[in-house]
Amino acid sequence: MSTPTKKRLTTSAMIASFADPGQPTSSAPFGHALAALAEQDQRIVGLTADLGKYTDMHVFAEAHPDRFFQMGMAEQLLFGAAAGMAEVGLVPFASTYSVFAARRAYDFLCLDIAEPNLNVNIIGGLPGLTTGYGPSHQATEDIAIFRGMPNLTIVDPCDSVDIEQAVPQLAAADGPTYLRLLRGKVPTVLDEYDYEFRLGKASVLRGGNDVVFVSSGLMTMRALQAAQDLAEHGVDVSVVHSPTIKPFDAETVLRETRGDRLVVTLENHTVVGGLFETLAAEMAKVGEQQRVVPIALPDRFLDAGALPTLHERYGLARGSIVSKVLAELA
Image (cartoon, rainbow, N blue to C red; front, side):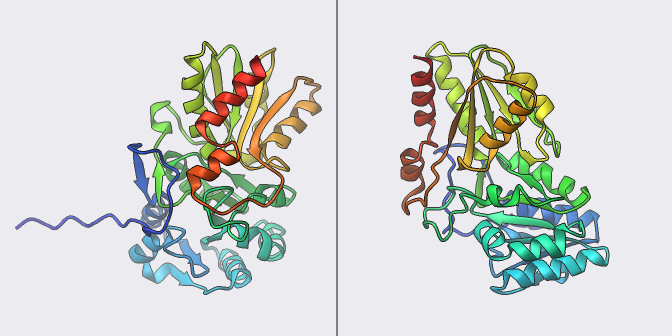
């Protein structure tokens, strides 16, 4: 008699995906990675603020119900409870939407978690423009809010590979972390580039003589796509992926940006306070004076609508990147 195969849990059908048609994806990579890690480490616990199925935490909840805590719609309580668990030696992963973590529960994260440097891992759904629900749900400024918080590590993963490899490293890291979660059907991109996620490190995914893309998050996927398109125009593009925004791997990135190539940053975040300003500050520190062109969200509240339409409108789409670079080189 054959043993029935356990069905891999997926995510809610209500969650929009930014994956291209026909692109390989992995369903709920964060939830599955956390559940797998918990099999090996009994200290791992999961908490959420009434958003289990919408942050892929429901996968962990089903696999480890005795280590899952539903805190209800109370983000400050979520972080306070996670801090208490970390104080007694557990390793909490606490999930909510990025807007609620950054805007609503900032003080609890700062004073309960970051100031005592506790190993609490904040999982923030809907970072940047990954939802069409408008300003109440679009965390376009979360990195800007969190970059000034001492002790907090900020990770902006590109795809399912980044997320799956990041989870155990976040658990092992000293101090608190904030992961900009890509949820639902997440593209699988970096497996084609001999890539390995290393917390705090950037990676050169491809070399190029004309343009240097420095990117994070889902914009690394778009950077790689745009680099392929630009090659058809005779433009040779290097792509540097920086999944850790803080601490920033200035050594690797600045080694690639030196010279006379056009430097372009690509991020799923407002142009204020994110990757663009991080890189510009590091270049200023060492006296690099070349211009950096930002591809980022504008410094304003964004519209609601369908994700493909919004990515076109705000310049995050593949074709928009190609057009901007060609205009800069003209």
